[in-house]
Image (cartoon, rainbow, N blue to C red):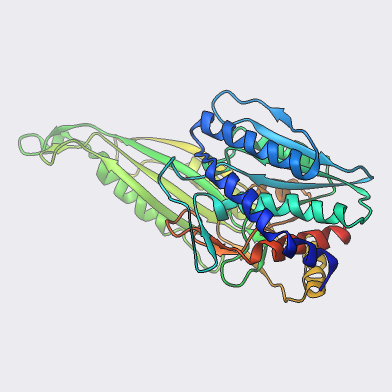
Length: 374
């Protein structure tokens, strides 16, 4: 057993205590007061475990983003994580059962942040020389699109040689993520002409009928061979069954594997034209997260992680993920990025969200051993 694994295993209960404290400080993305209170807890943990203070990036509507820095050197490593969650306060109770820790954001992704703190703490406590600057960027709006944090994430990534993202690995297998799909979020609104569906049906122009045509057209863009999917997830419109509807709208999610395909899909969405005469279409939205494509640099990073896992005593695989993370931004601007370095568990955004407690020291050790190689 490596010294780092031994150290972290011995300190598993302290790691768990830090994580429990962090999860108890609930932090739903849209509640700035709660998120900032959670940020204060995180600042206390960083101070206690690594002796560092936060650089705070104040926000008006979202929680303040936090940056912590440890060490100095020619190499700069950015560890990226978020501490906002999808859960409203009190919505998901904390419980411990069968070696698992259930709670709001415990998997996605507060455990990953705690692991990264202890990975560096173990490294330093055991006397290993840290010849790099480790920057921990902890943001507060990933679950709602990273609108206030994206520029900061990209700015800090550009200052860094590489980025490690402590989102959870693939459930069950524990594979790290060397590719992620890009995510487009759009809303299509149709405006027609209302009329009485009985007396003056011919005078109306149905916005719902137009939208039905557009939905079929958009859904048929799904191409599994290309890795492109389109989902029209929400549709609404009309007022009464006896009124030809003059307004309707649909919310659309698309996923793509490459930047080229992202550009194609954005062009299609933003150049939709009406099929029915007299209809006006309005399209709003964006490519919310560009794709994280698997590059030679990312593969090289994963190879180092695989070596680190072998040294600890387990096999590590890689995978592509359909969901996005803040790693999409850093990889897209050309900074080598490895994702999925958080804790193993299941159920992000689900009521059974949990981590496997024994994986806390193991995955923290993986990160610590990886830092040795970087």
